[in-house]
Amino acid sequence: MNTMTLYVERNSPIHRLDPLVKLLYVAASILLTYILPEPLYIGGILFVTFLLLIIGKVFRNSLPIVTLSMFLIFSLVIVQGFFHPDNVTELFAIGPLVFYEEGLYVALVLVMRVLVMVGAFSLLILTTATDEMVERLIKKGMSPKIGHVILSVLQLIPQMRATMVKITDAQRSRGVETEGDLLTRVKAFFPLIGPVVLNSLNETKERSIALEMRGFDSPMKKTFLNEAKQYPHNKLIAGLITGIVILGIVWRVFG
Amino acid sequence: MSVIEVENLKYRYPDTTTLVLDDLSFSVEKGECLGIVGENTAGKSTLCYALAGLVPHFYKGAYGGKVTVNGLVVREHEIATIVENIGLVFENPFSQMTGAKQTVYGEVAFGLENMGLPRKNMHTRIEKYLKLLDVYSVKDKNPFDLSGGQMQRVAIASVLAMEPEVLILDEPTSQLDPQGSKDVFKVIEQLTGKGMTIILVEHKMEQIAQYADRVLLLHEGKQIDLDTPEKIFSRLDLKEFGVRPPVVTSIAQALTIRYPDTQLYPVTIQEFKRLEEMK
Image (cartoon, rainbow over all chains, first blue to last red; front, top):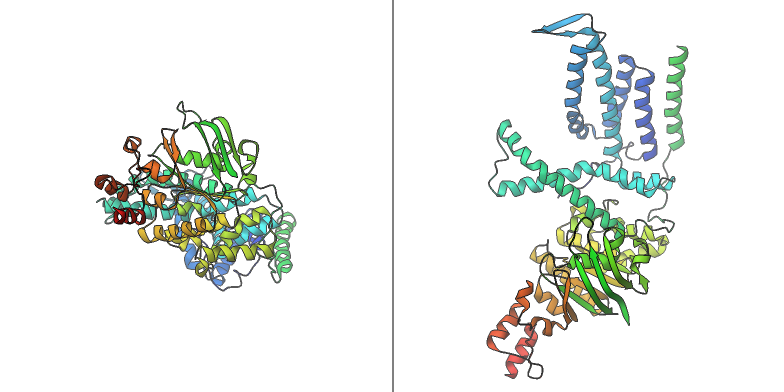
């Protein structure tokens, strides 16, 4: 059975960071791509994000997540390159369809933004144990219910992956061809959708019952098994990230 | 002393017209093990939900009658209050892992955190129940990396750690392999031995016969009978309700091996052997 988390256990300085600081980095990096919308600056943020993934020893683990976003990236390039309203300078043509330089530039900015978002979220999810992050947020005053919603969202992909493996095995044992060329795999994929979705919904309902039976809705003040963890240099790093965002804003306004 | 009292319980799920529970009345004594049997759709799981407060708080619908658990009227109290008195373990071990914790130790702690138990007491309870359920050796593992049997024992430990008065086990072994089932029944044997009040829903009649003090027979939401395993499994019309007696009882019926005083059939191998020797 696959573990129900995307977290990758490694010994790295990124893993030892406060989850809230990593959340701050996610927010700051995305915000900066809008404050400084030039490809050069966004490229810089992307470089830092990928560098952090490498330092966190999870760069390779982030590749499947980046690959998942490829469909969106290709769509962006096609739509902007062919159809952006500011398109003037022709780059190449495929029959009657003309691909423009202006559209490519807009697409480049958007693609880099998507990559920053995916990279930053990957950094957070792959280097932070979900329970540690949720517990940290709850200790900061967030409602446990919202905490559980975050947890459920983070578990959705691994949960569906585990269900999919289970159902694929069951279908294979009944003679359904699930391996081979692309067409065979595509054909095998569609019958999976119904059972996977229904199973996931059922498991979610059962998990809600399990939560109820563990007093999740209790009006009592929650206590915690683990003592509050100490994160070194927490304030310094958070201050640095905030400072960079403020600098970015100043640069944009007065630069 | 009754820990559970059910009076004229009726229930129907939202947007349905059939009563899933139809006028049930019974009580469960402290330290008793009550087996619930019946075919699928008899209302066994819904009855468990009604005892644990999930009906009518989680599952809405038409509800009538009264369920009292440890003096608390279920309808009038939140689930969070009821679970301090009654714990529920159901069939799918995978979906009973909350996913909120990365270790078995943390998983057992989850309910205690919600109850607001001080940290020191938490450790004592967690260790006690991990050892009781024989899962202490996997305490640092991720719950989702365990086998089905281990996961189910962690689910039982997590519920027991909240120290409820009553434990409901709703087909706890139906998704487990033979070894996993055996391990869970070993735990049930231990708990009944310790005098815990248990409500056991199970399709393996041999296990019901082994552990239950009394058996509640349900059919289409109706209470057909509530009596000792010997009386229930000696009923000649049992199959009409989709329930087959333990194999040993069927053999005893074929060989007419009965208790001389009551004319009932034995339900366990031990009793069968004893009566056969007497014969």
